[in-house]
Length: 238
View 1 (tube, rainbow, N blue to C red):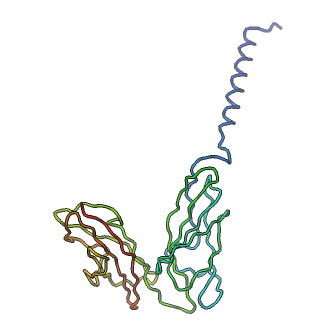
View 2 (cartoon, rainbow, N blue to C red):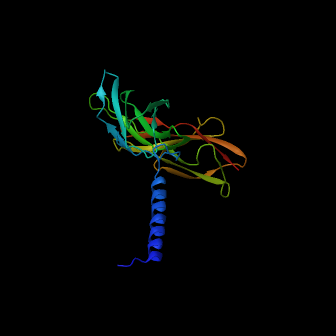
């Protein structure tokens, strides 16, 4: 049987090219030491907007809460950030795993989020922000979560429409019995009440002046007589 030398050469060259491309594809697989930006972690526990009943009681005032999130691609470490929504105090805890136990005060509202980090890049990525109420002993009635500002965003400059603007916020109560909002609004420190017992989460047709900085906050009230205050936010009208 005669072998065509020309065809044999073509086959050999083609095999060599395929081998090169095959090796190139293998080398392009992302290394564990990648400098890619870590992806955002997905939060799991405590659940969002719920009373946390899974904490381990330490004493009359404190419980240990376990925070759990899913592993984020390219992340080597995580910063767990917990904010007491009543005192506005923020604490940061570093973890090399996807959980962290933290001791917290009972009967307080909290928000929490996770920042994914990598040893191979200064870039990081933040998760969504969740809220929960750490249960107190007994069967308490909970105050609403402090309102979250939607518009205007704090520190931003906005345009008025015919000399008017609107304020908008979000509020949640685990007992689902919010009855109204007190809106504080002024040009000094947000201590002047403008509207009491407002039934909605949006207040429109607020008269403002150009080139002026305004301060505002929201007091959320429920049927049980409980209330919570947001932080004081600022914005400037252009």
